[in-house]
Amino acid sequence: MGNSKQLLVVKLGGSSASSSDLSRWVRALDQASIPMVVVPGGGPFANTVRRYQPKLGFDDRTAHEMAILGMEQFGLALISLSTRMVGARNRAEIEAAIKAGQVPVWLPRDVALSAPEIARDWSVTSDSLAAWLASRLAARNLCLIKQIDVPEGADVEALIGAKIVDDGFSDYLGPTSSVHVAGPGDLSSAGIRLAEGRVPGHVLQRHAAGLAAAV
Image (cartoon, rainbow, N blue to C red; front, side, top):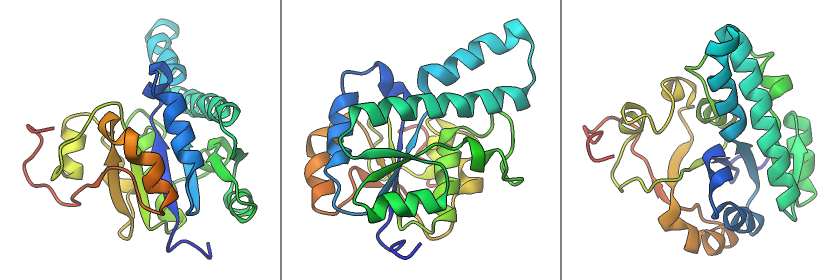
Protein backbone atom coordinates (compact mmCIF):
# COMPACT_ATOMS: atom_id res chain seq x y z
CA MET A 1 0.00 0.00 0.00
CA GLY A 2 1.53 3.27 -1.13
CA ASN A 3 0.62 5.27 2.00
CA SER A 4 1.43 2.53 4.52
CA LYS A 5 3.90 4.83 6.32
CA GLN A 6 0.89 6.81 7.59
CA LEU A 7 -1.71 4.04 7.63
CA LEU A 8 -3.56 3.47 10.89
CA VAL A 9 -5.45 0.25 11.57
CA VAL A 10 -8.06 0.69 14.32
CA LYS A 11 -9.68 -2.28 16.04
CA LEU A 12 -13.00 -1.11 17.53
CA GLY A 13 -14.00 -3.67 20.12
CA GLY A 14 -17.38 -5.28 19.72
CA SER A 15 -18.02 -4.81 23.44
CA SER A 16 -18.62 -1.15 22.61
CA ALA A 17 -21.89 -2.26 21.02
CA SER A 18 -23.49 -2.17 24.47
CA SER A 19 -21.89 1.14 25.44
CA SER A 20 -23.29 4.63 25.05
CA ASP A 21 -19.79 5.60 23.88
CA LEU A 22 -20.12 3.74 20.57
CA SER A 23 -21.59 6.61 18.56
CA ARG A 24 -18.97 8.98 20.00
CA TRP A 25 -16.15 6.67 18.93
CA VAL A 26 -17.63 6.46 15.44
CA ARG A 27 -17.83 10.26 15.23
CA ALA A 28 -14.22 10.50 16.40
CA LEU A 29 -13.04 8.02 13.78
CA ASP A 30 -14.92 9.94 11.10
CA GLN A 31 -12.65 12.93 11.83
CA ALA A 32 -9.42 11.13 10.93
CA SER A 33 -7.15 13.05 8.57
CA ILE A 34 -4.78 10.13 8.00
CA PRO A 35 -5.53 6.96 6.00
CA MET A 36 -7.28 4.50 8.29
CA VAL A 37 -8.84 1.04 8.24
CA VAL A 38 -11.36 -0.02 10.90
CA VAL A 39 -11.45 -3.65 12.04
CA PRO A 40 -14.74 -4.43 13.83
CA GLY A 41 -14.88 -6.69 16.84
CA GLY A 42 -17.36 -9.52 17.10
CA GLY A 43 -19.13 -8.20 20.18
CA PRO A 44 -22.55 -9.63 20.98
CA PHE A 45 -22.60 -11.53 17.70
CA ALA A 46 -19.44 -13.51 18.51
CA ASN A 47 -20.60 -13.91 22.11
CA THR A 48 -23.73 -15.62 20.82
CA VAL A 49 -21.52 -18.09 18.98
CA ARG A 50 -19.60 -18.80 22.21
CA ARG A 51 -22.83 -19.27 24.15
CA TYR A 52 -24.42 -21.69 21.71
CA GLN A 53 -21.34 -23.73 20.81
CA PRO A 54 -21.63 -26.09 23.82
CA LYS A 55 -25.40 -26.29 23.40
CA LEU A 56 -25.31 -27.16 19.70
CA GLY A 57 -22.00 -28.98 19.71
CA PHE A 58 -20.33 -27.47 16.63
CA ASP A 59 -16.53 -27.56 16.53
CA ASP A 60 -14.02 -24.72 16.99
CA ARG A 61 -13.37 -24.36 13.26
CA THR A 62 -17.06 -23.74 12.67
CA ALA A 63 -17.22 -21.39 15.66
CA HIS A 64 -14.30 -19.41 14.24
CA GLU A 65 -16.06 -18.95 10.92
CA MET A 66 -19.29 -17.95 12.64
CA ALA A 67 -17.45 -15.43 14.86
CA ILE A 68 -15.91 -13.85 11.76
CA LEU A 69 -19.42 -13.44 10.39
CA GLY A 70 -20.19 -11.74 13.70
CA MET A 71 -17.40 -9.26 12.99
CA GLU A 72 -19.02 -8.50 9.66
CA GLN A 73 -22.37 -7.90 11.34
CA PHE A 74 -20.85 -5.39 13.75
CA GLY A 75 -18.95 -3.83 10.84
CA LEU A 76 -22.19 -3.25 8.96
CA ALA A 77 -23.63 -1.59 12.06
CA LEU A 78 -20.62 0.76 12.25
CA ILE A 79 -21.02 1.68 8.60
CA SER A 80 -24.65 2.61 9.19
CA LEU A 81 -23.64 4.93 12.07
CA SER A 82 -20.86 6.67 10.16
CA THR A 83 -20.68 9.41 7.56
CA ARG A 84 -17.44 8.11 6.01
CA MET A 85 -17.19 4.36 6.58
CA VAL A 86 -17.68 1.85 3.78
CA GLY A 87 -17.24 -1.90 3.62
CA ALA A 88 -14.04 -3.33 2.16
CA ARG A 89 -13.25 -7.02 1.76
CA ASN A 90 -9.70 -6.97 0.38
CA ARG A 91 -6.64 -4.82 -0.20
CA ALA A 92 -7.93 -3.40 -3.48
CA GLU A 93 -11.20 -2.27 -1.90
CA ILE A 94 -9.34 -0.83 1.10
CA GLU A 95 -7.04 1.19 -1.15
CA ALA A 96 -9.94 2.40 -3.31
CA ALA A 97 -11.89 3.59 -0.26
CA ILE A 98 -8.90 5.45 1.17
CA LYS A 99 -8.19 7.06 -2.19
CA ALA A 100 -11.81 8.28 -2.26
CA GLY A 101 -11.45 9.87 1.18
CA GLN A 102 -13.55 7.22 2.88
CA VAL A 103 -12.82 5.03 5.89
CA PRO A 104 -12.84 1.34 4.94
CA VAL A 105 -14.29 -1.11 7.44
CA TRP A 106 -12.68 -4.48 6.87
CA LEU A 107 -15.24 -7.25 6.34
CA PRO A 108 -12.88 -10.17 6.94
CA ARG A 109 -14.70 -13.31 5.85
CA ASP A 110 -13.22 -13.77 2.37
CA VAL A 111 -9.59 -12.94 3.19
CA ALA A 112 -9.32 -14.31 6.73
CA LEU A 113 -10.91 -17.66 5.92
CA SER A 114 -8.61 -18.18 2.95
CA ALA A 115 -5.36 -17.39 4.81
CA PRO A 116 -3.72 -20.68 5.89
CA GLU A 117 -1.57 -19.00 8.55
CA ILE A 118 -4.62 -17.92 10.58
CA ALA A 119 -5.64 -20.52 13.16
CA ARG A 120 -9.31 -21.42 13.08
CA ASP A 121 -10.15 -21.61 16.76
CA TRP A 122 -10.78 -19.33 19.75
CA SER A 123 -7.06 -18.51 20.12
CA VAL A 124 -7.62 -16.02 17.30
CA THR A 125 -10.22 -13.30 17.72
CA SER A 126 -10.65 -9.87 16.16
CA ASP A 127 -7.60 -8.54 18.04
CA SER A 128 -5.30 -11.01 16.29
CA LEU A 129 -7.02 -10.41 12.97
CA ALA A 130 -6.43 -6.67 13.35
CA ALA A 131 -2.75 -7.36 14.09
CA TRP A 132 -2.57 -9.67 11.07
CA LEU A 133 -4.16 -7.06 8.79
CA ALA A 134 -1.84 -4.33 10.06
CA SER A 135 1.11 -6.57 9.26
CA ARG A 136 -0.21 -7.44 5.81
CA LEU A 137 -0.75 -3.77 4.98
CA ALA A 138 2.57 -2.72 6.58
CA ALA A 139 0.59 -0.22 8.65
CA ARG A 140 2.61 2.18 10.75
CA ASN A 141 0.19 2.10 13.68
CA LEU A 142 -2.35 -0.28 15.17
CA CYS A 143 -4.80 1.11 17.74
CA LEU A 144 -6.94 -1.14 19.93
CA ILE A 145 -10.03 0.60 21.30
CA LYS A 146 -11.10 -1.12 24.52
CA GLN A 147 -13.83 -0.59 27.08
CA ILE A 148 -11.31 -0.29 29.92
CA ASP A 149 -8.43 2.11 30.47
CA VAL A 150 -5.05 0.39 30.31
CA PRO A 151 -2.30 2.14 32.32
CA GLU A 152 0.58 3.77 30.50
CA GLY A 153 3.69 1.64 30.48
CA ALA A 154 1.77 -1.61 29.99
CA ASP A 155 3.09 -4.10 27.46
CA VAL A 156 1.53 -6.48 24.97
CA GLU A 157 2.23 -9.57 27.10
CA ALA A 158 0.49 -7.95 30.06
CA LEU A 159 -2.65 -7.48 28.00
CA ILE A 160 -2.51 -11.10 26.89
CA GLY A 161 -2.06 -12.25 30.48
CA ALA A 162 -4.98 -10.12 31.62
CA LYS A 163 -7.18 -11.51 28.78
CA ILE A 164 -7.59 -8.01 27.34
CA VAL A 165 -6.33 -9.32 24.00
CA ASP A 166 -6.38 -12.92 22.82
CA ASP A 167 -3.59 -15.45 23.25
CA GLY A 168 -2.55 -15.35 19.60
CA PHE A 169 -2.17 -11.58 19.34
CA SER A 170 1.63 -11.37 19.50
CA ASP A 171 1.97 -14.20 16.97
CA TYR A 172 0.20 -12.14 14.30
CA LEU A 173 1.70 -8.77 15.17
CA GLY A 174 4.19 -7.58 12.56
CA PRO A 175 7.59 -6.15 13.51
CA THR A 176 6.99 -2.65 12.16
CA SER A 177 3.59 -1.67 13.58
CA SER A 178 3.47 0.49 16.70
CA VAL A 179 0.67 -0.73 18.98
CA HIS A 180 -1.54 1.77 20.80
CA VAL A 181 -4.42 1.16 23.19
CA ALA A 182 -7.27 3.60 23.86
CA GLY A 183 -10.02 3.39 26.44
CA PRO A 184 -12.93 5.48 27.75
CA GLY A 185 -10.54 8.03 29.22
CA ASP A 186 -9.17 8.75 25.75
CA LEU A 187 -12.52 9.30 24.06
CA SER A 188 -12.89 13.03 24.73
CA SER A 189 -9.65 13.82 22.90
CA ALA A 190 -9.83 11.10 20.25
CA GLY A 191 -11.54 13.16 17.55
CA ILE A 192 -9.08 16.03 17.90
CA ARG A 193 -6.08 13.70 17.86
CA LEU A 194 -7.32 11.90 14.76
CA ALA A 195 -8.10 15.18 12.99
CA GLU A 196 -4.52 16.24 13.71
CA GLY A 197 -3.15 12.99 12.33
CA ARG A 198 -2.31 11.52 15.74
CA VAL A 199 -3.31 8.20 17.28
CA PRO A 200 -5.65 8.07 20.32
CA GLY A 201 -4.46 6.51 23.55
CA HIS A 202 -0.88 5.55 24.31
CA VAL A 203 1.77 3.20 22.98
CA LEU A 204 2.10 -0.33 24.32
CA GLN A 205 5.54 -1.73 24.97
CA ARG A 206 6.41 -4.59 22.65
CA HIS A 207 8.31 -6.61 25.27
CA ALA A 208 7.09 -7.97 28.58
CA ALA A 209 7.84 -5.83 31.61
CA GLY A 210 5.96 -7.71 34.31
CA LEU A 211 3.01 -5.33 34.35
CA ALA A 212 0.20 -7.87 34.07
CA ALA A 213 -0.86 -7.22 37.64
CA ALA A 214 -1.18 -3.50 36.93
CA VAL A 215 -3.46 -4.16 33.99
